[in-house]
Image (cartoon, rainbow, N blue to C red; front, side, top):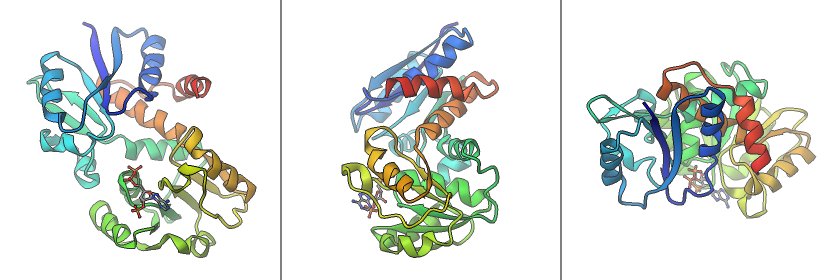
Length: 270
Ligand code: ATR
């Protein structure tokens, strides 16, 4: 039977997810399709009912539905509950949906690709306290890292730690970046501070990893600044493909697909 998959969001036209998943569907000769479907804000519940009726196998969920799906989906993984957002839905046999968050394992897989195999007892500086930071905090805390969360709005940094972590961690204002960067094993930037062509002022990297969660044009200025300051700068494309791989493995109940072929396809597009 043909398996229907889709990414839902608004906007969704720019999404690389169809290309990533179609690369694997083609490579594995699976009978499946992956569409990109615009679902406006406020229409999450109606859309899920519709996709269930149409017997979609799975959905990727992006803005503005990542949190809203939790109002209708009750079958959620522990990660979804702690992060407060889902990016992967799988239709159960009774037509209801199961919600997972593959951003957390996707980040860990992307870090492994970047040479960080084990985060336990590492000191990690996480910049930002929004949706992307929540998945990162969840994954790194469970991995045993010691975290320092810095955010423009300091109170939010304290709140996301309480919401997403089992252990307590330090937090503070983004202005203290240089101070904390000295003792960090690596940095994860989840802020959109650099997206207007500006960038966060990083001190000397001395060959350490600066992991930028965004990719393409918005990430450019920040990555360039990091490299000037001797950081090994990685963009978020690796994480995008790794989280997609986790979703694919859930939907098809199979091993993780080949990340490198999908990454190559994305790099050609960007
Ligand atoms: P995402 O889902 O990508 O994490 P988000 O939830 O809107 O998006 O979070 C954006 C993050 O970037 C927040 O941490 C935000 O800081 P505030 O919590 O203080 O708003 C941060 N951010 C956005 N623009 C910024 C800027 N110009 N300087 C510093 N931080 C910025």
